[in-house]
Amino acid sequence: MSVYTNEDRFSMTAERYLAKHHVLVYIEDSISQLLENRDENPKINPVKILSEYFTALRDGNHTMFREYTFIHQTPHNRASFVKLFWKCYRQIGKKGDLLSIQEYHSLITLLCSDFPFEIVQKTARIILLDDALDCLISFTDFIYAFQTQFYYEEFLDKCLEMYQSMIQTQSSPRNPVVVPSGTDDSKIHMSSHHPGDGVDAMQYFRAVYPLCDRVNYSTPPTEALKEILFNVPRVSFYGFLMAIAKSDAINEHIGRLPPKSEILEGPEAEITSGLRQFMREHFPESEIGPSVSKSRPSSESSGPVDMNNSNPVAVKAPAAPRSRSVSRTRAPARLAGTGQSSLTSRHRKRVVSSDESTDDSDDDDDTDDD
Image (cartoon, rainbow, N blue to C red; front, top):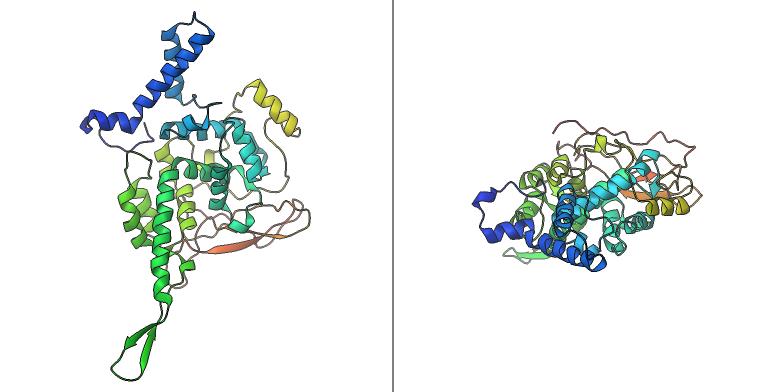
């Protein structure tokens, strides 16, 4: 499976193989499903039921309407659920609709009724500043950030712990340090970096590298992390998350969503009549997805992340009057005079209504280089 590392399966022990691919999880779940179906219909064919179960598992069609504990249990389940969400609601992106995080959570709960709101909230923090979480998000921005947060949840939690530890260590030297000089005079030294500037990217890579390639949780490919962190001097945590969400190599490694240039292509997914009826009742303006906003969507990038461009996420404030909202930059700003870029910048972008345009909107200059 593409969701795992390229470790040779024949070199693994039996225990590691079972743990890595969660074989026992699916065996137990398939037997549980079989017993439940047999209670309802004693005449069912067990072989047919098990065959249908593992066919759906192979094709990634096994997570719809399942409980959160099952969807969250394995990397294959998580990636399959992200793909299911994309297939069911791709039409939202085609229409250019922007939704709030509450609306995205409502759509997710149509597929998994007990899906926690916290994960959707963390997804929004990859795209928006903490004080702008009530802003609207385009479908394309949301789906890749959601994949990053949901699929790599444990890895990202540990990366946050590492980052906070480095920030605390870095902030301590900012207190004045008196260095004895042999005279009555004293020299005061201050750290040249503020914690808000992020941390040294190379040091951060060395801190997160031991977390890679674990059996008990998924991690991005080491080479992709090198590509992100070796090309910038400093990095903030949310700049790090943003770069992961924009990485074509990491998206390909997970193996469920197409490249960003193709995310809105393809036919409308076939969904259940009950789900379609719910959508029509709650979002009557749309055939399948909601049409809550006529504002222009964020600019879409067809190539890999350009570490030298600033391309803020375009959002529309929910209030009618013109206002300002803050979003995280979708790519870092170039450091003046160094030829390097930083993942720590934040920019403000003016939000306008659908019948207005600005002269200072950012063009998408993402490169097509791998």
